[in-house]
Length: 284
Ligand SMILES: [Zn+2]
Image (cartoon, rainbow, N blue to C red):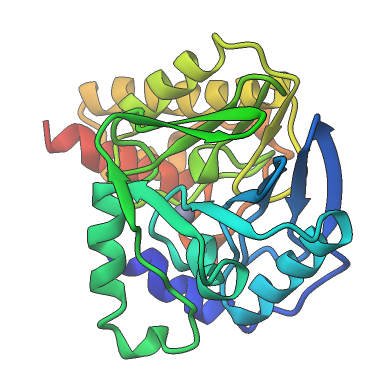
């Protein structure tokens, strides 16, 4: 369970490649694309009297980079932070980005965050566990905008949140979507993950801010969903034929997705994803 968290700490030593890219994606709304693969992307919304931020990066240094990007656009206080899930690369900058902000997550994310804070390896992270949690959904009103935050069921973890900006037609996905990349899979559900993406694809979308890598379009989100679904079907059929986990890892055909990034060190490859799906199917 802690695998991804520990890996994120190891990944902390990965050096930044370029400068974070900030792009306006709608009225008052900005995508912050991290220049460090080990630290998540963020999204921030500038309202009349304050700022709402989705995810805050891996640690104090990444949080500072994000905060200075926000300050290029607005001097207003950060009023709300939404963490899409508990992995440190999405919430390790909370205390730096918004010491006085109201932090909002699912109940599960808060529980896991409190557990992480007991871990001595997490010392450098600036955690702030949630002040407000929700079970299914919550709407945050940041005058003149409203932001819809909802739990789509187990997916990348057991308690992810998706954040939809209806006026801007933008979705911030956390790690439910990585642009052209195989994702790490924590204790979630690939089957429900695919359904959650199907649901997300039904709303108007001008842009999709992924958990990592470049800003996405609706077509990019669709392609990622198709990758998960193709892989799921292949693994299901092979397992029904009685193939072993090793055979499944070897025999999947992912040529259509040859451009997808593979990260063996995060257990985020086609074969790793296939293995997780296989194990989830075994458990049912
Ligand atoms: Zn994650």
